Length: 146
Image (cartoon, rainbow, N blue to C red; front, side):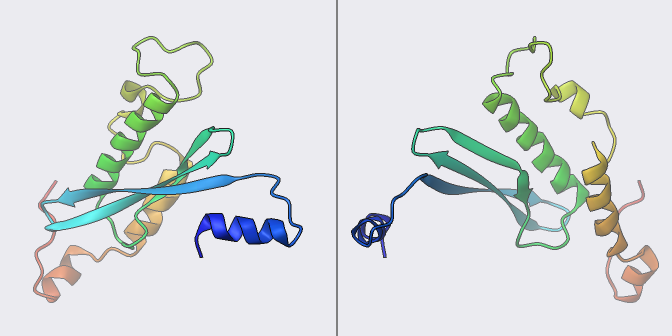
């Protein structure tokens, strides 16, 4: 049933809409040459009836894939930082004092994880990774030596 028909029926039955939100879902496919696979990153937004749109960066995730290579996660993080800076109006080099978002230079600090949430996610991801010897036993090629 479409949204307009559903709203009309609810109104006829005496229900009053007190808030209206429209959800949009966006995907960004990030290709990884090492695995020859594409990993879809999903990001959602909610728009209220007043026209205010909220982007849920904290819910962005690779929902179709349990294992996502670190290089892909890093590319996703870079894109999310870029989008968040745009949404916060902090594309300009000089951010206003008190801004809670990190600059791109601060976020790109050459570490594998930027905060505790990423560390936990990375730990869970690494827990499920096979060792090089396990990969060799399965006739697979391990990651190149770092």
